[in-house]
Image (cartoon, rainbow, N blue to C red):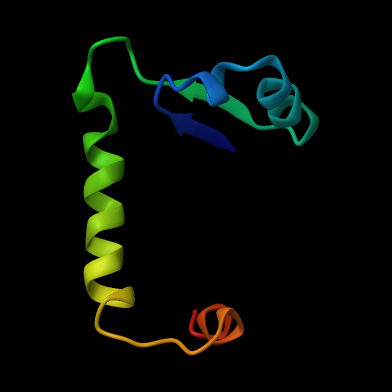
Length: 68
């Protein structure tokens, strides 16, 4: 599994990187000053929200989990 993030200090911290290593995940970060690195991911999330989340109302988190 690859975890891609921006360059936020919380994602660059040693504690976060150790947790990724513990679960066998590979860290991936945007390049400095390149806002387009995350464009494909952001576009996918936008589509997911528009099609699956915004048209619906969920009363509880359990309802969200069951909606998959």
